[in-house]
Figure (spheres, rainbow, N blue to C red):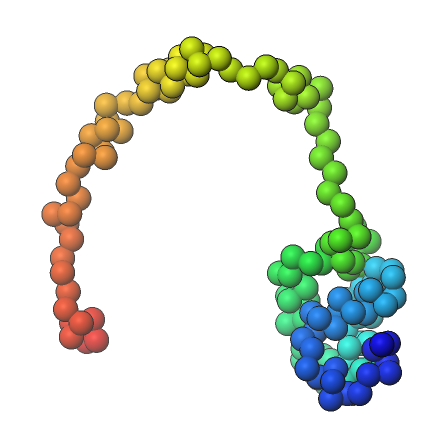
Length: 143
């Protein structure tokens, strides 16, 4: 059902993020923040003051939601419409194509990594820092 055909009471049950998803699906094209939020405000019959008061929080909600992507032109779209492509340079491709390491090579790598550990690092792990801790009762915490 089209959003503009839905009763206001039903639309109020959706979050702004849900309404944004529906608008972007319905429109089929990316839109900027003010355009989308004006459509939401229109659907929910919100005033211009409510629009001004809530658009900042709305923008924050879009930026933190993983379902949206902000495009270079400042428009929002659904992330599903933009597949991720990974570009590898020639060196990375060669590294990926190398044969797996043999067991001996793995053991040599582990030994090399172990040789790189300083004695100070081990002493730091063994040091007893518990001496500096003090137990505080709940009553003391409340004060």
